[in-house]
Image 1 (cartoon, rainbow, N blue to C red):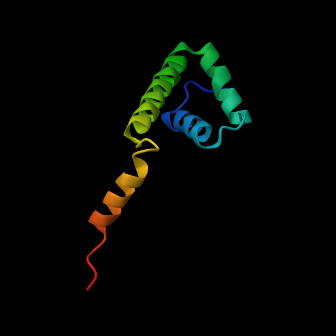
Image 2 (cartoon, rainbow, N blue to C red):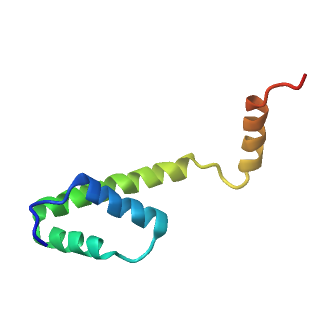
Length: 86
């Protein structure tokens, strides 16, 4: 791969595709990851982005209601957002 450094967009593309699809690596992803193995700056950048994505996912999990609370919360949310009937 002939490049100086990976872009933020490429990192986001890799992390987003893994989060949404969970599929194997594409050729582009393999090339980028190979580049990161030989470039410490890009490896650090990729690591930082992975850390941020992990933190975001953990915050999402904390904000999700438990199974027991979900029906009560949905009913409350629906009753607040539904206008009164006339």
